Amino acid sequence: MSFPDFSMRRLGLTAAAAIAAVAFAGTAAAQSMVVRSTGPSAGKYPTGTKLKSTDKLTLAAGDKVVLMQAGKTRTLSGPGTFGATGQIQANQNMGATVTRMLSTGPTMRSRGGFSRGAETDTPVNVRAPNVWLLDYREAGTFCVVDPATLMLWRPNMEGDTALEIEGAGKKATVAIVDGANFRKWPTDSLPVQYGVDYHLSGAGLTKPVTVRFTEMGTVPDTVEGSVDMLMAKGCAPQLNRLVDAMSETEAVGG
Image (cartoon, rainbow, N blue to C red; front, side, top):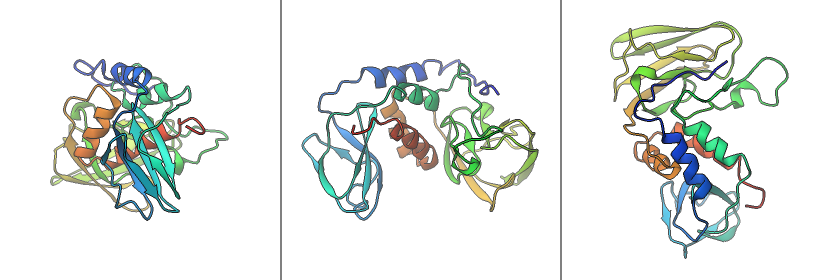
């Protein structure tokens, strides 16, 4: 199934710029930023913390901190003391991963989810292939690039299902048919409004999910800029999706 088309009149070069930033960013000592922090010491190194090249992080057992430096991620696991900057390596999939996750264009081709047949992942563990797709399992604030092209996504392509959406005093039902995991947000009957809670139910959800939209505006042309904006706007599900995807492409020992 092809990735859905998005309007790209003003955002066509975003993914290309992001991949260029990853491919050509220097490896010299640069400022690092905490993009995820979990464990006993999470309060010492909250997400968004900027670190100088001379800073040290002292982690306890169970701590895990993901740093972004020069367009790449570096995962630190405690216990131990680590420099804020260091040589970062990424496997050959890093550039393609960043491009795929941040692209707003129609050039990508992806099934985008769980397909029929034997797979190593189950649908619950499958991640949406792009940060601008609304995975309706994820509650929280969602940054919208263009309300007119907002796409809903499910991890499973099997079976017909119906997603119930209620918000701003209106209701809509979105039917997703067998063999598809993309469906456009029902803008005709339920236009996207910023700062409004939308309650989603059905479609395999074990409990209702509440989503609130915020305007993304112009998408930054670097992965660091995208991370900064997602943090600033509180779009945690999308930030986590991007960080997860990038962390998986870290080279062993990098």
